[in-house]
Image (cartoon, rainbow, N blue to C red; front, side):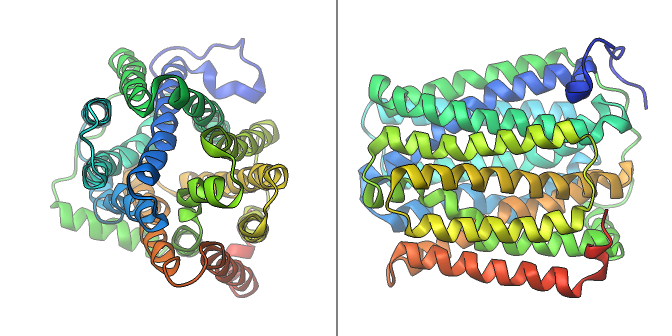
Length: 411
């Protein structure tokens, strides 16, 4: 595979993927952009609470932001395998930048309603649904194949470092600049990634297939179905995403109504999850190769679910912060194991479609779970609703490990 530039030998093994200049630019641009995204996420959740004083609306806006992943990500994967991935990334990133500036203007002039927040969240989710498969299929062209595991870990480091920095800055920025300031800063942050994308010159792609989009989609689904290890991983991600990934949507509720810590406390809780994720990503990067991935995915995820249940009933901010760190650490270990497995099991020709199926489950089902949890919270305590869903997921993952031989053999 031709690469955009020579590999720099000065980089140590723990960050070996950054020795590839194209990946280094892409990594840095994503890092700055993701900081802005997390600043917006914190402010958006708080804005919904200010406008509605309702956990249901938190779940609804979370649903609106993520439901496009359920319906459009698979088509984004098909498109990513057929068009110039760099150009598609530029288009989607520009769209998200403009939406951030629009939300900033509405919030600044105090003319925003919860329906407008939900509509912008939906459009932003639509752009992200088209962006995610291209992102997952684009970066492998920027590194050597032996650097895949390290690149996945470093992508996790930058994403989760932004989860530490972004919410922390977001909490303080809301105090200093107001929520509109957070949205505006997010819009500016997209310029870093757009600049990186304009400077990167990836290798030429293979000609797009002549088959129709639906035929390409069916081929991708058949490809996953006929690879038992891929198939079981997709089902596990689907269940975990539906049952527990929407948990983060309700952190503003826990911060305000259970722990009584306000905006800054919300920022620290989100940052705690990000800090744990960074530690987990550094662990993966340092290890170099993830062994016994099947056990890590099943048993590690079960421990994360137990941690979430404990968080739901914690009324101590210090304990809750520790639990968020543990949740982030365990989550990134399992997600990294899944990503490494899928990247290695997939061929270059099918990677966009495989990662779009993964993205549909990982990013498309949390809104449905968040909406279900939000509806349950209207009838039973929110803590109980989230704990029940996490408990069901814990039992399911233990059952997968007990009865799925392909999963146990995944190394």
